Length: 188
Image (cartoon, rainbow, N blue to C red; front, side, top):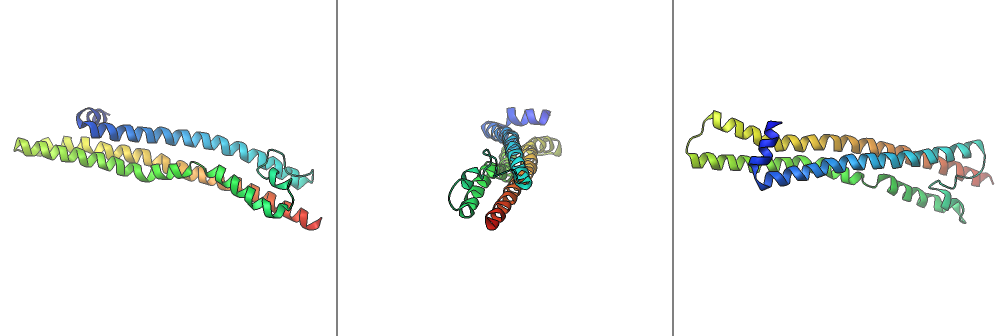
């Protein structure tokens, strides 16, 4: 923890920008996960109820369903893939941001580390002496940026995969509804 404080206070403007950038990434990761998770959960619940209606033969899809606008039109078989596509876009919105965060945060941390190491070597060159007792603590502080970058990347990547799976499950429900609706229109 002390290395983190030293990295921020002693590192200068670049270290502050790197740490703030990674902090924003981390907060954005958490926000995207919880908001998308709740959205997909509620959408999935609606589609599950709609699928149950269709399987029981209680009528058409629920009016809250992603497919409801397509079923009320003329040729539903042509419109259903369009509604599915819109639902997929809605379910996966924000996932690319998590992918970007998970792939770029280690590089941002590495950038902070490199700048800190360059400053350390510059100070050592000015001092004229270099011993392990002087270099080791400075390098240790510099590596904090890389550690923070990886700390941000791991949850972003993991939560991206979790949300991707939830979106897939949601789209699978919609596809099952489409399959049932196509069968109904075939037999009618």
